[in-house]
Image (cartoon, rainbow, N blue to C red; front, side):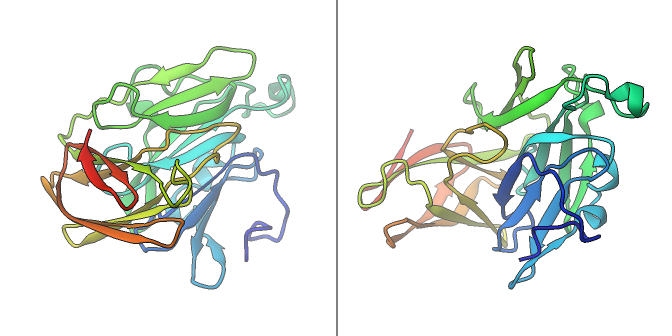
Length: 265
């Protein structure tokens, strides 16, 4: 499938992994964090296998000197495009004695999706000491303050956890969906939701795991920029049932129960 080796045909020391439709193509892509001097792997589906597009996307050079652990796709700025966060930290606390440009503690990274599968690293612009070097390991996402945008929890090796609150400044809106299965499993693991809005189709899947030793929240968050009404969402439940809901309002949270309908939370 094209995932086993780098473009140079070399095996890499993968640590974290996440899977999502990061280019709104309707096909899942994969990100894998690797050892320093190996770079992130960003794999886009060509329909039959995967191509590593990390260099073209702007992730390769930016991650060459980092050792990545946790990673996840999420819409940090709620513009309808999935961004990428990465927790970095070396495994050798004496590595700087060997390679002067690589440290044990390393800055986490946030890559904003610019569209056309291009990403821009913006950690230094975020404030809150986000870019401060840490021995990063786990990384999870959740809207812990229930304001509609997604916040980050980062764990470190022999150190504290860091909880970063996301405060939106652009006025972008979101819609949040909590799925409950009846014929499917109760947590709706494996359900896929497609959102249609403003000529764009976004897709998310309810999943457990991913990243590195981490579990993000199960509710799904879609960024819709300044759209106030969503054209429709379509849910493909693990049971095989498909449900469609038209004209939902953004800025809201909804609970969708399989075969029983929708309620505002």
